[in-house]
Amino acid sequence: MSIVDRFVSLYAPHLCVGCGREGRPLCRSCGDLLPAMEPSCYGCGSTRRGWRTCHDCKPAKPLTAVMCLTSYSGPAKRLLAGLKFQRAMAAADDVAALMARRFGEGIAPDVLIMPVPTATSRVRARGYDQSVLIAKSLARQTEGIFAPLLERSGHSEQKTADRLQRQQQLQNAYSLKRHADIRGKRILLVDDVLTTGATLDVVGAMLKRDGALVVGAMVFARVE
Ligand SMILES: [Zn+2]
Ligand SMILES: [Zn+2]
Image 1 (cartoon, rainbow, N blue to C red):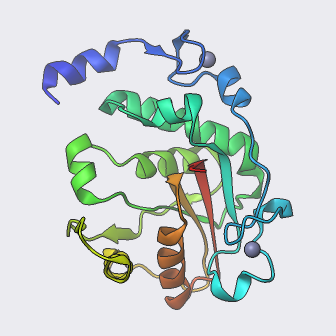
Image 2: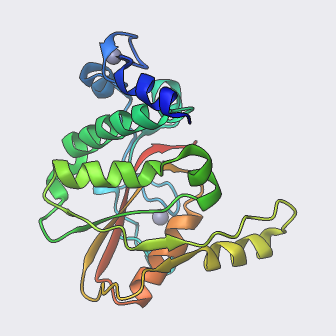
Image 3: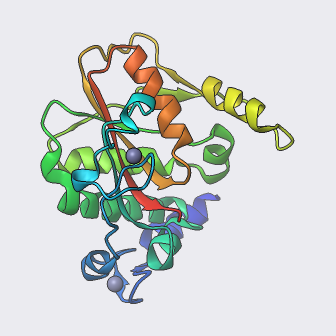
């Protein structure tokens, strides 16, 4: 983006993706109108209070709970799609505010709020990482600690890879930053969109291997 573009987008008014009113990318009332999802286990989809992973899925699933705010459709989809840099920051604040309102009470002061990094090629193209912006803003609006301790390798994914190769690429894509000590820590992963949950499983298993006490996740929109 050119300097002029950045300057313009900084001062251009935000229009709400829900009602079109000037002010925020997602105004408070439209945020509250986003349909809540039925709390469920991220492994099998069965209804579960507090988004906890069910007993059947627990042995194979590293995350204790995965909370999803809304489905990836309507205003939520529009909010995440095609954002420009300055708008992305304001939109991340709105997403985080909504997460804090709906789920924030459970975030204790010792919880590490950790963004799941987006593919580096996509970050380079956009100039920002949406999940980092959301996690940072969520930490500001709750008691948790912003902890960007995950790294994503720069290798681009091969489109022709088969299922096994894709799984292998995913396994190798994430690592913990050098000197990051997460032993005994409670970690809340933050991402903008949830599809299969494969990424959360890979990252969650790695964090548990490295000594994390509990790993959960909070996601803005789930693809159904
Ligand atoms: Zn609105
Ligand atoms: Zn389950």
